[in-house]
Image (cartoon, rainbow over all chains, first blue to last red; front, side, top):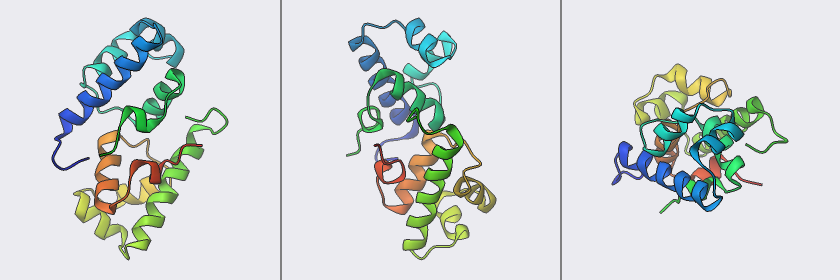
Length: 76
Length: 76
């Protein structure tokens, strides 16, 4: 990750972006969890940046939100 | 992930892209593993698409290879 950003910042940023796009869709965490077939608490943890999410789970979330990976992880 | 691509295809594609950029740099798997502070066998498994790699590990690899995330996961 950007060397000047540490790991938890990266995860927090990704989580914030997921939350923002989820809210734009008018979805609750339960809605997103249902669409992704994840547990609601997992979505909450991801949004808080507490999960070093796997690429497949991140791609599933981006797919359900209808965004691109670069929207969730904007590269400087 | 792209719904028409299944999970293992996605991981295989990412692994192939990592291998391609590693070779472009003239690096062995050992070299990339050393730079990322990973075990060599982990890099091998990732390149073969056997690992559902975490976002932080993927970002570390892309950083050491000097590429962007979209280079490792080109979005259709």
